[in-house]
Amino acid sequence: MTSNVFSTPECSLGVDVQADVVLLVDGSYSIGLQNFAKVRAFLEVLVNSFNVGLDKIRLSLVQYSRDPYTEFALNTYNDIASVVKAVRTFPYRGGSTNTGKAMNYVREKIFISTRGARTSVPRVMVLITDGKSSDSFKDAATNLRNIDVEIFAVGVKDAVRSELEAIANAPAATHVYTVEDFDAFQRISKELTQSICLIAPRDLEFSEVTSRSFRVTWTTDSTNVMSYLVRFRKAEDITGDYISLAVPADTTSAILPHLTPFTTYEVNVFAQYDKGDSFPLSGEETTLEGTVQGLSVSEETTDSFRVSWLAAPGPVVRYRLSYIPVTGGEGLEAQTNGPDTTIVLQELFPITTYRVSVSAEYTSGLGDEMQVDGTTKEGQSVNQCHLHCLCLSLTSVTWCRMSVSRKTYCPRNHS
Image (cartoon, rainbow, N blue to C red; front, top):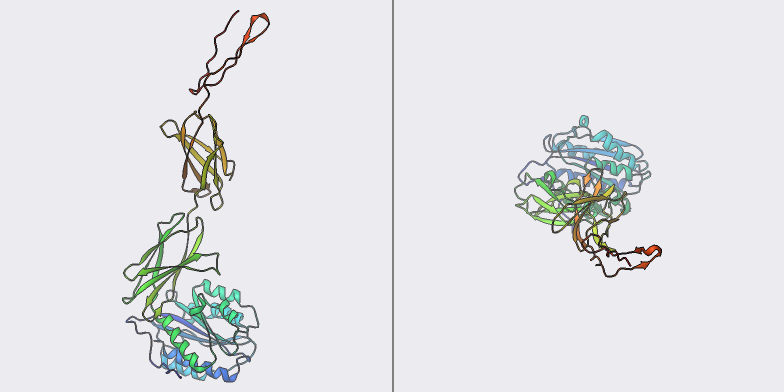
């Protein structure tokens, strides 16, 4: 079954969509002239789906092989008719497939103000290639993403999907496409158009940051959002799975719970429409330094006990402790030798319960404290006196310490 060619703008959500879209087209020998003709037809379908204008969607076309070549920049054409004419007539250049070099060119020579790039609108790059690069490309793709370029990858002919996935943004399910015929090209055209034209949230903010959670807040210009999707994961875990939260359409804030202390998280917020999801609004936030865990008391004596715990996350300088009898009295303080996770508290009263607070000290300050109660043992009463008769009738006396923290002596016995 053959799909219909889209010849009318698909960006019709009631607001003027703004985006800078660069079409990066593989014109190398490996694509071949026949497939290049299909690519050109696909591009015509794709650009016809956009509402092109200086204050709307700006389009640029870059063809690459051994070297990249600008067919037209973001500020070359202001109307769809001119764009379509240029797409229909740009030539097949041929050469090797230096995809990495081409992406660096897009970042350095196309997404700049003198070539029509804007600083306050979404940036999109659609790569169309057979996925067999002759040079390194991963760093070039990362550098584009680092300037907030949303990358889609479309593979034609015998495309290497692993290369496409390494280049495109995550998730691959919505950013990587492989095609074998013109019908599939048209399906992809619709999906790409919807992704670009659905209004994304804006003004991402973080607040109420603790060691285990923080709040995410955003705003929107759209009136027909069905819901929001918040996805987050540890920023260092670039291959890990996202955790997702569904947020109702009338709410533009969410608490991200159960986080790891002193950890940076990548956060993406999507507006969800009946036609699909918008581009994500992305940012990062770091949780506060953590608390100690597994606090316990052991080795109790009449005047001391040991306090131990599991190490708090992050670069701990030392641990600080405070302890006070639960019945009241003078509070005392102690600290560990560096990041040691145990200490013996001494010179305590017998049969006394102390409330011990432990917090990790970082260069940025103290983390949240955790508490545990510990009780000293009962002291022995005087239960025996040992008299030893020495020369000159002197008597040697020994005694035991009583539970009232004073020393009691047996009387001298002269014979």
